Length: 201
Image 1: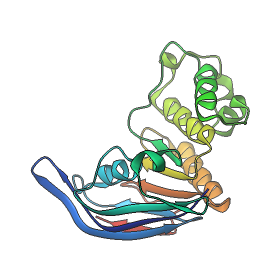
Image 2: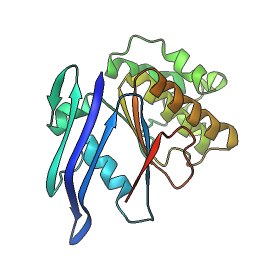
Image 3: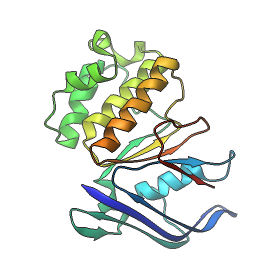
């Protein structure tokens, strides 16, 4: 379980462009942070940096997990659940088969069907993923996030492709995750009702 995430004077460059520098923040267990900014300011890149997909040009990123400090990107990754623009779904697998795969991958003890139920996809459990709508695929991504059992959720535009009911679901899941000691950082152009504060880029 992660108790805190600390960024100190982070700088990130993509190609010849410096996206941000001297960025410092701290996130504690139970907090949801909305990462805000115009297109191109580096919101997604910041999440990718935290996830360990990118390396900072300068600064330090660390987390306290299970009582010890973790700075290495790969070590951070085992505590992180990711929801990005790409669903990462196998089109020939059913929604339930997809969740079973991820539950085994994450070694989660929960019943995969319960995660589908939590995101409103029980009726689509036996439907191959290629037949799911964009909104349903997004819901399946949320179910995968639940199946990960990870403490820190990194969400890149979590409301994309969702209707009003789907957006309400995202807010409820974030609030529930934080209420049980989890942490959330979400890059979004829409208001994040469950956010405890915002981080501007």
